[in-house]
Amino acid sequence: MATDNAKDNRDNQQLNQNTATTNMSIDIQKALDIISDVPLFKRTKQDIHETLTRIDNKLIKIGVFGTFSAGKSSLINALLGEHILVSSPNPTTAATTEISYGDESYITLKSQSQLLDEINAVVEYQDISFSTIEDFINSDLEKLKSHLNKNQLAFVHAVEKHYNLYVSMLENGEKHAINQQELKKWSAEDEYATFVKTVHIALMHDWLKGKIIVDSLGLHSNNQGIQ
Image (cartoon, rainbow, N blue to C red; front, side, top):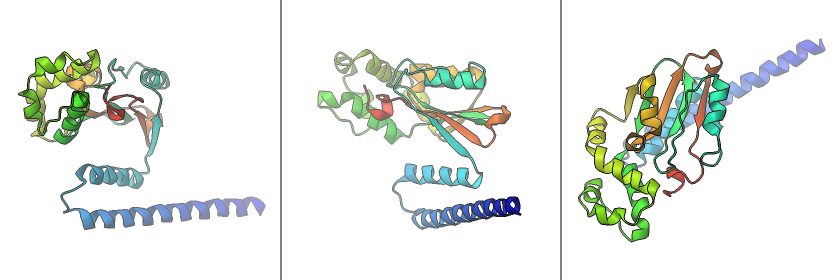
């Protein structure tokens, strides 16, 4: 009898938790519907929508945190049992990596406003600010480069060299499918990783079902302040 009561209690607790989660999702979705036409906070609304999707799909997001080059990628590779993640040597161009169950990997590009913010973070100590990325590219970059460190130079070179490629990709949306051979290119090579917000890696590992592992940006990386 005691065992049956304990099981009933667990079932009731799970039911109450599921009901609370469902109600919360409905409330958040209603709020999103109300502000859907407001031309502000586009990135925030998208992030909230993605969170709701994870809640509805009962996905658990597991973040791996640490300072830059602290071995987060190596730890995740060890958990995966294979060398999947390639660490970027440059905190200025590093992108977040998410790993989940599936067979379709892709990247999410930075928005132009995010890229512009990062450009201005690089040059702020020179008392310079740009209104558009085109203004930055058309400025005296050689003079600017003389005041930058190695990591910042890699970032500026990438924008200078591949901005047109980035813009042409954005015309087809922020998300683009990639294959296994392209992971290093978009996650660790400065001239391409500069434009990437998140690398989404899909692997057919059963233990990844229902989970998303996040190799987060380290402290002092590009999202923590351009070095």
